[in-house]
Image (cartoon, rainbow over all chains, first blue to last red):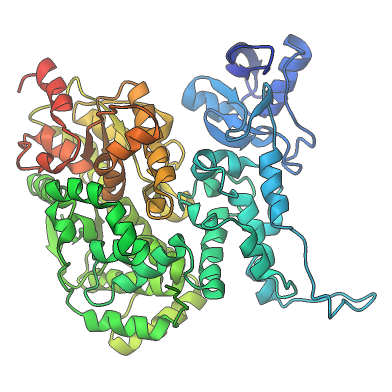
Length: 324
Length: 295
């Protein structure tokens, strides 16, 4: 039995910088079977209705990563997203270009910032020049070593993660989820010798601008789980470089904060991260908040069973380098 | 129902009003909150960054405490919910479990993995159910347009949180509708509040918070409501900073904790819910209710 066709209203973002003063949403309605991929629908629009629609695509099989776009506000590959569920939920399909990258035309964005961040981490194996790989040989890894980064090679560089990332949106200093996931992949490769150099290539605190909001992990069509790789990279950065940035100082400071009472001491944490001078800078806001919420100055109650927590720390918390 | 109450650090200190409202709502719905003075902080996502296994062990200890008492855990913070649940998920990995168990066993703690961790939003919408919530409403919030703001860790990663759709959730909006408010649909409702990087780069954190508030405002919200005290800090206590960051002089967006809006609809007074502890005044939003539907 062939599937019955449904009426699918599209609203497609149209904009040509230099020619159009503002973006507009062009409406098209097609009759399609529910499992039609949105890319197929867009190509039908371009072939039969409006040849001027600009979009990027290639393989149509979720392999090349070219057709990432915003579909009803979600970062998705158009080739693997079907019209049926979107219409069922939203009654229409709003198609927009990826976010966080300037529009070149319609659904096509300028990816130079995305690729620039990728190139900056030098995403290739850097072997020790003093120990070149023997001719005709391969350097092998154990399955356990490969396991540490096995998700990352699945990445197809579609930039859906970058489009979904609120840190990339708000701060040009954030390298983006893919670049950091790739950095992690090389940083844990036992054959690579540029771990520290790569970490230094990110601008100070660049790694720590990750909000761990996991929006990238939701957007990723290949389950690379960039936010989790970034978490792994943060722990690694602390063990390699020590807590030498605001972000790492805060993470280590929080860990240390629980010693003593087992609950957060807000004032102690501010002091650990920002130092006394930093605290002075925040005095005005601190007083504003204190007037409504005087408990921010209060020491927390010590939990019962604090000795248990102490023993957990003793067993699992290796000493980490801490820099002033 | 009886449940182990995990208030988290903030509700016991600077977000005391969240604890007040939670108790009010649970009392009126007959939810018995069992308290455990040996619960520790969940690590707030920061300890996870510094030492993943330690973070799992700290929370496995918290979970084991409730498990031993035969109770599930109630959280009132998206981040606590995320961290406790993360420990549950990670403990399914035998390698992780054996490392953590090696630290817990010598101190007589056993984590079996039978305990469930539920945020108040889930308890209200699934365990208690919307019809029962609706039955308690004495002063429906008719006329108040509220933007739900979920908080990242309540939703994501969706496969680990076993949450509803992480990108298109609706339970919070369903709850708002049940208490008579009008939920506002806006993109920012599933976005980040910026809090985790407030110490790293305040200007960026404030800009992210401001963006979500502006988005809610642009979609007609009279107020926002959040199930997370960290989001509340970011959106309320630092709203003046967010305002500057998005160059909008007066955002004036009242921010409620989730149980506060529920309790208001159940008939609680602003004093009982600590509304005067907010940095952004809430009376403008409350006036919307009074204007269109006198109690």
